[in-house]
Image 1: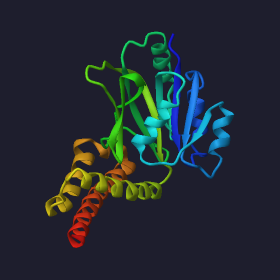
Image 2 (image 1 turned 90 degrees about the horizontal axis):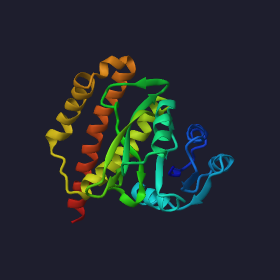
Image 3 (image 1 turned 60 degrees about the vertical axis):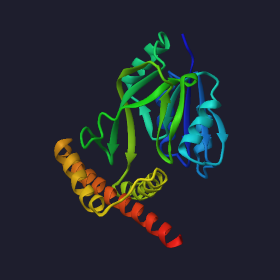
Image 4 (image 1 turned 45 degrees about the vertical axis):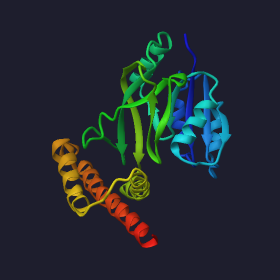
Length: 255
């Protein structure tokens, strides 16, 4: 049987962390919390669960997660966000893997809770994530946001049954605030990669995004919640491309 380290990065997660750590109590042989200097009760909650609490200045999701994984006692890691929790069915699958860890990485479906409603469409489910892996077989990669653990060439990947619950937003206002933050980061990432923001993307991109998520990805089946998500996703598309356009405008004016 292999031993697992559960690794979580945090910043002011007192509302979420206990739920996350309770869900892995039967899985974890080691818990590492890599914290970005929280000012709430995050540290107190982490230590109630016997976690090793390590603080480090945040300098990007990729660097923070690679640092956090390096602090784990064991090579086999279950990497979670503080607003996630392992479902009973997924827990059973993970415990089975402890007795027979035959792949280098394992993906799982992530099911999102939006202001109390589970979202099964809108392009949000199944949101497959590789969160269980042998850290010797890969590393976190990405630019600014949208980080993911990438296996080295030839790495073996399998899928686990059961959902990883994601408690994303407590309200529509929460969604709007995070969307503002992530569209800024997304625009900066695209700018670094040299992507452009022509007018047709700024104006037609949001239209296509809404049509795709609401009709093609069946967002309408999630009712009022689905409409809200698709509408805000469309606006986020507009906002990201508009911010990207402004970055190029600022560069042109500075140059």
